[in-house]
Amino acid sequence: MKSSVAIVRCDDYDELRVLNAVRRAVDLIGGIARFVRPDELILAKPNLLAGDPPDHATTTHPAVFAAVVRLLVEAGARVEYGDSPGTGSPATTARKAGIAAAAERFGARPGDFAGQADLPLPEGNAVGSSTIPVARVVLAADGIVSVPKLKTHALMRFTGAVKNQLGCVYGFHKARMHLIAPEERRFGEILVDINSTLSPRLYVMDAVVGMEGNGPRGGSPRKIGAILVSADPVALDATACRLIALDPVHVPTNVIGQERGHGTHLQTEIDLLGDPLDELVCHDFNVIRSPARQPLLTHFTFMKNLLEPRPVIDSDLCKLCGVCVDACPVPSKAVQFAGDDHSSPPVFDYDACIRCFCCQEMCPYEAIQVRTPLLGRLPIISRVVGGGR
Image (cartoon, rainbow, N blue to C red; front, side, top):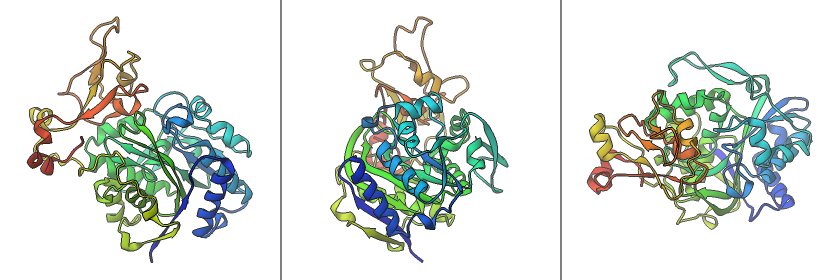
């Protein structure tokens, strides 16, 4: 049986236009009553990476989130919402991003993302343990409806439906996942393990305005003009990739999700409903289009430093805030201020850097870019190693 993905054109964030687009997309795949029942407790999970204003395109837009919450409430569900951001408290981040006000207009309550509980994982998982700490509300809810944002990502190429559930992992444990799995393939396995275990019932993607370039926080807003909805996160992410002219097989979670039977990225196995995809494709979307890294030539540190992409600080843009230092998951810190006075930008120790790009992901001033050394950009090398720009 094919997986269904609904695509509905939505040109801006006018609340009525967004509501109609979300409602139509959900109806195309069976209606909201197919996914929730009256009186169930549903966790509505947006992307709340950081407390940036909605027009930065860092987070799920409040208009999209409000539309999803409204449909859930109309179906009789009790709705809680939240996310574990990369920086800042869940409550403050939701307020700054406009999500709190949007949700509470329709009676949704903030979920308990300050407390933690252990999520059992299947045997042989990529995390390497039998459980992983998640926010307490995640296990208290009867089901999850995920509301991701279409954005670029320096490590995974793209962040969407599957990766959105990493925000259910409690606090600093998210950064620990990068230490466990610094390579794209292994990190993708962890993301698939977490998402498939939590198994959200429905995914509603905000692709009205996405983020291109230096995402998932430091990139540029880019109008795409679509709402995407599916119960298959892999099919949804693969369709979103095609929407930005990115080969879905260059996103590890698509490949791993297909291999493990959690969805499909194959176009022949996806039934597209609604508006024509071809009319919405952004052919010049600024996204890394190379395959994921293959650590064949970069096992040794000196080769890694010669060939692999690495984070680079633009001293003209750096505000000396230290967010990159706090975000680094390496215990000894692969990026640090050189002196106690913090008068100059932090400095990278590329020997210690695991290339997780958490520093680039969390920089609030777009001051960190991912750059590939000259040797690594040679075509014969990049075809073998893969990597970024």
